[in-house]
Image (cartoon, rainbow, N blue to C red; front, side, top):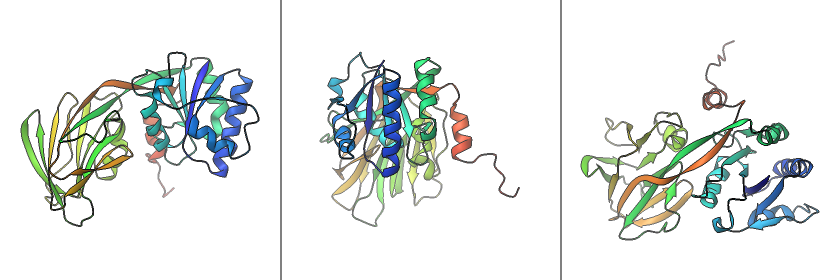
Length: 293
């Protein structure tokens, strides 16, 4: 088995678990190839003692890779998607962060997870993504996709912005708010949830439109079909607004028109047999717990 490994930053705690992971992979005769920048970070910690191959871009990830392992939290998982893209390589996240809706393997269970991976005791879930096109320019050229959400928000001002929203070219409404989130089912447990949006099961063929601190209080989150194409037109006092795709953010002209639709490829995620989405919800959101007893 050949796996790609990606991470972003290292704490003392993270380093200890990375050492455990590398030891287990070596013991299982699994070939590990590290993302180049991540490899340089761990080399600063005076390990590993043996040399590992590296990759620098998604072009270097071919069909010889069976899995990508991410080491970190959900943010690390999101960044890994920019390497995998449409390569059809399933991702398994090892959670050394906090919440972990995407990185579902807890750091204490690394060896157990690798054993389940080797024995094929897992299912592969396909996750939909969003793609965007920005007129008059496209600052995300080549990386114009998001697995969690696309968000438009104000920049350098306390004033609200107005976002005219169209669904399949039909006018829906104008949101007067700090911003607007378009979330996938995967992203429904992220930024959208914190702004009052609903949780969608990963296999739901829907999107969520969630306003950020809307001034018109009757503006509620709206669930729409994922076949819908959205057009967002920004109206703002400032010359620029912020546009983010997952954790990647750029400034766009406040007169920009943003078109959003489902991407033409999906990301494969690995769910080990002992884990389910609803089990993760219960554990992460403390559903069913009664603090009175």
